[in-house]
Length: 295
Image 1 (cartoon, rainbow, N blue to C red):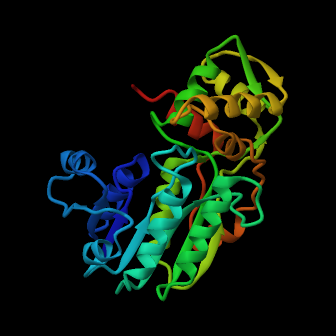
Image 2: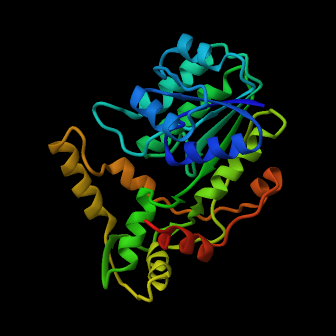
């Protein structure tokens, strides 16, 4: 197969490139900057990397020409004045549809909780992006995932730090998490490229749903530690995020970001696992792999 990947320079994109190449596929990463292209060429010098503005439908069409499938990995959970949710999610999907792609299939990596009726700006924007893709002529498989844990990504580094503390203070630590191993997400995306093209939406999370406090304590066990987790009301977090938004054009945390992270995840994986023909890595094995990995 000949597969294009937008957003290919991220953690998941780089892992997917390797997986597809190992399977004998031709891979065409599509990124927005020469810097991102250099990141990919440094690890995969023989791949055909294209640099394209994701809002440029003609450029996207030319970049995808000759490919069978597109894996679309573009998205954020924190917007800024320089990169709004509309620019990150909706504009690229509109451009892809307008490009009249000659693809057979699009695979889109989304977020669990995406809903047009959501009060969360990020989840609303993701829903509009999904709608744009479904309105196109190319069948789209939407794969929604929650927190992804992989070596040296932001979520894993935060969990590693918290697992080693004697006391952790967080907002609404009773919030349910269902983290999934990054390797499983890559396997799911790979499997999705092999599915018969049709419009479908699959929610896929990790094998266990547990509170954030329980997750921190499970992480602590990897270090022989038992952190004391103190929970603060979520309204305090939203108030702090609002203050950051007022004071900065690129705040470290926003209300929408906090809302995505605070979403209660309790997903029944069976439909997705059956469709994709895969099994999940256990939470304990995931934590061992990502928290104790050599850095």
